[in-house]
Image (cartoon, rainbow over all chains, first blue to last red; front, side, top):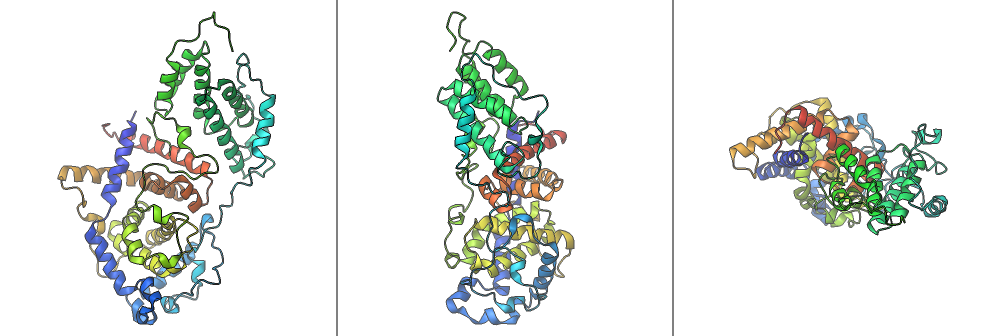
Length: 269
Length: 209
C-alpha cells in the first residue's frame, strides 16, 4: 500500500515543477503591457491606449478567436452570471472590435450565483433532529441500530431532493443533515457523552443507511463504545484498525480503546 | 480536506455546516482574495497578475494545455483578467474567478492545439526555478509527469476539484461556491481522488518514501 506521504510528496513536487520562473512571468507581462494597458491606469485617466485599436492589433485576432471559441463552449452550470449592475463601467468597445457581435457578459461571469443546490434554511433541522433523538433509547444496554438490509425507497433518490425528503443522503440537504448529525455525535464522544453519541449514530443508521461517510460513522460509533468502556470495545477496535489501517481515526482509536474494558463487576451505565 | 495520518480525526477538519473552513495551510495570496474582497477599483492588475500568475500557469498545465502553448494561454488568461478586472464585483474569491477564466482558456487551447507563428519559449521546459540539484529537478519533473497523467484521466468536474483542492489547496467552501457543487460533494470528491491517486501511484510502482 502506498504511503500517504508519497501522495503528498508527489503533489508538492508537482506544484514545484509546474510553477513558472520569474523570467517567464516577466515575459508574459511584457507582452500584456504591449497589448493591454492595466485597467487601473485607464481608470485613472491614462486614456489613449484604451481607445486605440492598435492596442489589440497583436492580440486582436487572438481575441476574436478566443471569443468565438469561448462562446462555442458555453458555460458550465456553476458559472451563471448575474446581470451586471447599473453602476458597472461599460466595457471598452475597442477591446472587442475584432470579435463577433457577442455580448461579453455572456462569455465571462462577473459574479457568482448561489449554487443551484444551495441548502434551504436549516432553522427547522435541529428541532426535528431533537425530536427524533428523544425517541431513541439512550441506555447503553440497547445496541445501536444497524442499517436495514433493504434501504427504504426514499433513500434511493438521486436527484436533488426537495426539502420534504431530507433523509436522502444523495441530496444536498440530506448530506448536510447527515454531516451535522455526525459532527454532533463526534462532539458527544469528545465531551464524554457516549450514550448521546450512540443514539445519534443510531439515528444516522436509520435515516442515512447509504453514505460515503460510513467509515467516519463507524469510527465515531467505535469511539463511543470505547468511551463507555463496553466489553467488546477492544474487539471492535481491532476489527476497525484491521479494516481501515489508513484512517485518520487510527490515532484516536488507539488512544481511547487501548484501555482494558470495564470488569464484569462494574455496573453497566 | 481529510488528510491521512492526522491524529485529530477527520470530522474536526470538516467544517460545521454553516461555517467557512480552511483545508490546510494558508495558500498564497488568500486574504485579499477572500469573498469579502473590496471594490474592483482597489485591485491593481499588476498586483493581481503577480499574485496569481503561478497559480494560473499550474492550473493551465494540469487542465491539459500543452507546454508549448502555455505562454500563449497565460497571456490569454490575463488579457481577459485585465479587461474584466474593473467589473469584478468581489462576490467570490478572485482566485476562483480567475480559475473560471483559466478553465475556458484551457478548453479553447485543448480544442485548437494551435501554435503561434513565432514559437515562444515553452514555459515549462525551463529548469525549475527553486531547484538547483539536477537529481531533485528530475524527481520533481517525474512526479509532475505522473500527476499530470493521472489528471488527464479525470473528467472535467473532477479535474477542476483536483487542481483547486489538491494542488492549489483552495478551501473546500470556496471550491464549492466556484464550481456550483455542494460542500459535501467537494469533500467526497477530494477523498475519492486522493485514494485514486494513491492507487495510481501504486500501480506505477512508485517507491514509497
